[in-house]
Image 1 (cartoon, rainbow, N blue to C red):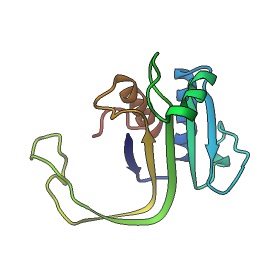
Image 2 (cartoon, rainbow, N blue to C red; image 1 turned 180 degrees about the vertical axis):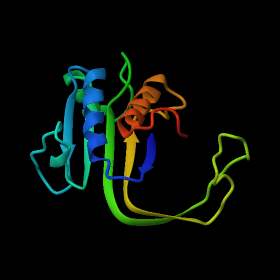
Image 3 (cartoon, rainbow, N blue to C red; image 1 turned 30 degrees about the vertical axis):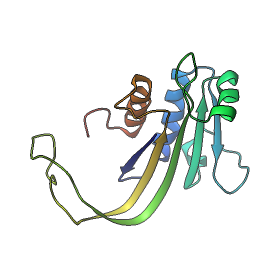
Image 4 (tube, one colour; image 1 turned 120 degrees about the horizontal axis):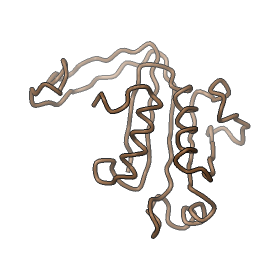
Length: 158
């Protein structure tokens, strides 16, 4: 299940922080990195070594890595499945958005606006990939909460 997130800043430091949080969640985690350009050496603890786009993969241990090869993101019999995070830094990002909402207090100041042009000098698009939607699975909700924490907005924004 893909969970897209867009933030109005260069999120490479947050991506490095997410790696650290995932390693706390899974102390034996195997973390892979692919920049789409071939093999690279990236210090996952140093955000300055991250290229402008990449894919990070997380498996709990060697057993989950084997499971992933055969079953993809499907959960394992003893718990969750692997997780991936794709990210890309954009400069001068301009997008058209429609903001849904029912007019409640949590819908925000743009609720119900259509055709809104969102212009961001710098932005990062991130896609969290897991075996289920965070609204449907506790583990996936936990991983999304870790990503939000790394990005600096916790559960306070929707």
